[in-house]
Image (cartoon, rainbow, N blue to C red; front, side, top):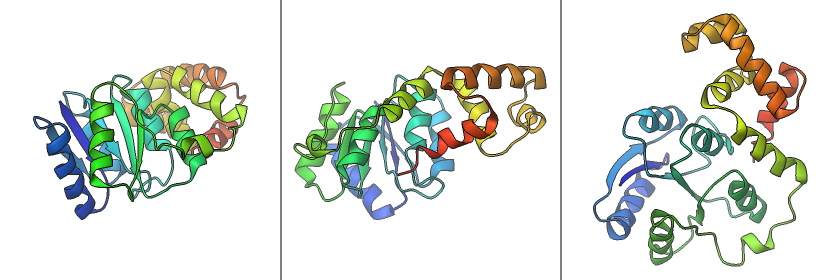
Length: 209
């Protein structure tokens, strides 16, 4: 099993390594310290089987890395390991496809148990905490579904649109034709149910926590 640890704190990455050595003894472990290194490590073959993801890494203090991972690597299980204990954030992470959520205040035994559950193709969320979350707005659940409906290339294109890139710039960055970019943008806007690039950018802001 290839496991990617994505956390900006070296000491906590070391703690996760120790927990992994107990939960999944034969795991091949790769580390990332920010969103850029997360994307690079995840994109190297073979795809990770499991990602332990901190939501508050440099580069994106939001659910965006989770949404990206679930879109680009649907076969990869993602478990959030975060200091954020807000029940609503836990519920939103679950909606966006997280297989588990462990708060950093959890005991080592609890962390090991959670990793084992997710590594065995199960799920693990804090008992009682997720149940306390407010009922999510329908628009958020719909957003998660619509983002997951995008193809990986449509997601990449729309992500760059949200960053303010022009079609010509996107074509150059992804090494594709500008007409292909336009086709991807049109298809992505239709899937998200928005009419223009500005509305698409607003959609990505919904990933903030």
